[in-house]
Length: 344
Image 1 (cartoon, rainbow, N blue to C red):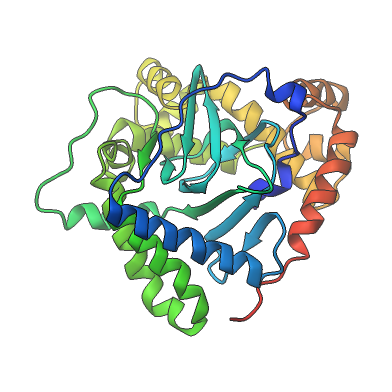
Image 2 (cartoon, rainbow, N blue to C red; image 1 turned 180 degrees about the vertical axis):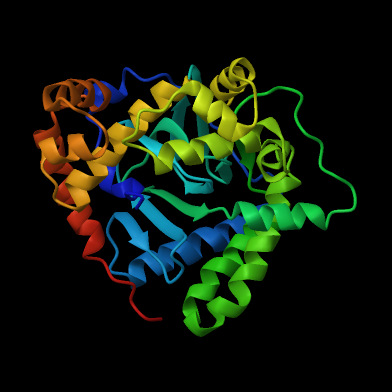
């Protein structure tokens, strides 16, 4: 299932709506001279890359498929989507993600790390033409994280709570330096196949060893409740149009139905059926925007028997009717797909 890029589904937010949002708290990092130096170099390197790609704002592809750069000159409206295993580093400005009843807000030199496919609502909350939001999104390789864990002599501590594999942490000097080397790797595409895997291993290590890294360990370690729920989530994704029973998913997770239901909700903030519904609507939106599928066909392909029911639930989730929404999103998506990575 192809993932629709963040920037293609995020519209500017009107000032009147922005004033209704909670202020939240954005921590200001870094705090020591060496971190200031590394963060400044990283921000300059990313800005230089964006300028070399034609400048402006939006989502910018890179020579590495799993890495994208984002710049925005204004705040963006909230958007519901499935967050893949990845981490998003903010270099300037701030973002906010709503997951269940919790709001995570993170600013310069902080990152959001997500360990499993999770429905959540995110938006840019701090940006301006003079100080645009600038960020980097890097997809995580769970198999590589598992391999890194196997080579660590002292195991990282798992969190006591059964909460989601999601956290906000500081981008300290070692992690920032690693990401800076990754950005500079764009200048030598021929070196990417050789050097990128080792850089990702290093990134995995710094994330796993961070104060909240145990949240990712829950997924990378075999036979944890998180890893078992992740197997059931895979079944939901692969059988998106099928009618799935909780017992069937619990069997895939090798858990009792009651234990599975409890852990699934703790990790995703919703029931399995609620998860499937949100996944269906998000996938239908992707199909209509990217593949130009009409409303009725998209509804049918994701498992809806009634196009009118699909439209009602779509409007309830995205705040606008499917056809109108798709017109807006296709315009933004076309801006993204028309970008091509320019050689260094």
